[in-house]
Amino acid sequence: MRGRKAKLSVRTIDIPVPPTVETAERMLASRLGPKAAEAAILRVSEELGLVSRPPGSVLCALALARLGADLEKVSAALDWGDFERFCAMVISAFGFEVKKNVRLRKPTRQIDLVAESSSLVLVIDCKHWRRRAGAGSFAPVADAQIERTQMLARASGAPDKAFLPMVLTMVDPSVALVGGVPVVPLQCLKDFLSTVNPYDESLFVLRA
Image 1 (cartoon, rainbow, N blue to C red):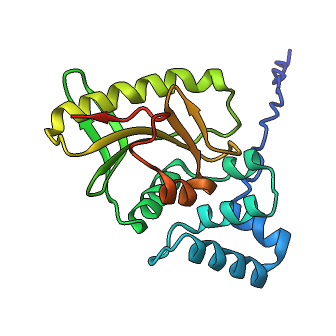
Image 2 (cartoon, rainbow, N blue to C red):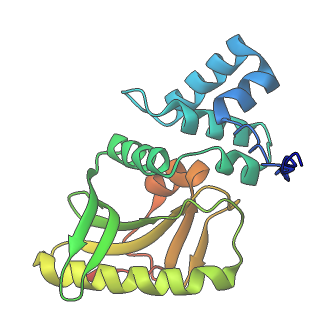
Image 3 (tube, one colour):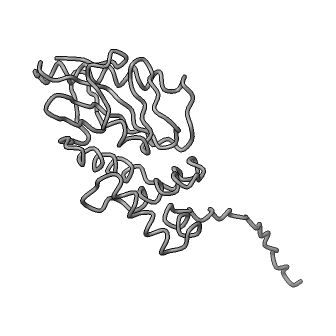
């Protein structure tokens, strides 16, 4: 008697292919065309007073924001590291000395950016959220930033300087105050830095 061949049971598994990630550069080029996109990027860079060339993805995102693009889609195309580096470059262009990823101890805390001028220290949390957040979402973020700012002010021993906690975002449309902490969209950062007043009583300003 001849042996029977065993039948193999084959299962087909469909593996989903992830969608192509849409970059801010591609979004801007498809909207304006290559030459117009480059001109829009240059305008944004000049408006912000940047000397060196920042990450192109963030410049494209800001150009798209000026064109009325969906900020949530634009923000999703950004890398978190580019977002933080760009924030540091814009603030530096306004004469602040910027330090990134400042660590505090007892308890251990980390501050994304500390920007210092002759009289003001901005203690900045960079929130690269991919969609708009409600006011309730910012309350714990503001409280945590106040705690970090208090720790930094105590450790600094600089009684002649004012310390202001703040939060930087990409997708929120306008500057808001949450418990005295300014929540500043990236596209409004230049105006905020030009007008911020450490003696404004609506701001949660600390002194060492």
